[in-house]
Image (cartoon, rainbow, N blue to C red; front, side, top):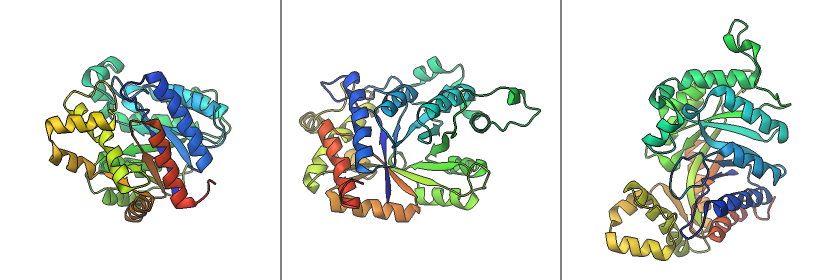
Length: 335
C-alpha cells in the first residue's frame, strides 16, 4: 500500500503559526525517512488553528529540506488564482525539485466568504469558470495551447525538465467526471465527505479518457487517521481534533487545537456526544493493527492506488508517532 501525507499545518493552543510551519517541515522529513510517497500541504485563509495560507511558499522551504519525497498542494484553490500564475509558480518549484512536484487543484474557498471576497473579485463566478481555468492550467503546464489561442505565444517560464503532475481534488461526482474528462489524476477527500466515495471513484475510473499527459487513471483517497499504541490512547488523542472542529462550526476554536484536557473540559460543559459520534465516523482511529485493517478496507473499497493521511493532534510528538506507527505496521522498518 502506498501512503502519503496531507498536512494542514495545525496550530495547537498555546503555540504559534511559526512553530506549526516548522513542525510541518519536520513532518515532511519524517515522511521521507519512513517511506511516504508524497507530502501535500493545504491552502487555508483566516482559519484559526491552521497556519498555511500559501502552499507554494511552504513547498520551497520543505523541498529545500528534503531530498526525494514528492511535494504538492492539497489543494491550491483555483478560484482564488489565475491559472498562468499557478503554472509559473509550480514550474519554478519543478525546476528547483525536478520530478517531485504535484499541483493538487481544489474549488473550495478555503475560508470565510469575506476572505474569498478579499482574494477574488467574484469567487462564485470563478467557481463556475473552474473547468475552463483548469483547462488553461493544463495547457500552460504542458505547453500545448492550440496555435490560434491567445495564450499560445506565452510560456509559464521557467519551464522545468519534468512538468508538475496535476491532480484534481474533490468530494463529488462532478469533480470526478471533470478529472476523468480531462484525463488527469484524481484525489477524493473521504475525510470531508459523507457521500458514497467508492461510487464517485468508480465514476472517475470508468469515465477516464487517456491523454498524452496520462494514459490511465490514478487515484488517491485522503483519510483522517490517528494511531497510537493502544485504542484507548488513539481515541483520547482524537478528542483534540474533534473538539476543535466542533468549536469551529460554532465560530469558536480561535485558540487553536485544544489539548486533551481542554477538549474534555469543553465537551463536559457542552455535552454534545451525538455530534461527536457523527464526526468520529469520518475518522480512522485505533492501534496500529486496527488502523492498518481500516486503511486496507478503504483501499479495497475505493480501489485506490494510494492512501493519503491527514492527522491532527495537539502535541506534535503524537502526530509524528501516529505516522510512524502506521508506516511500521504496514512496511516494517523504514524504506
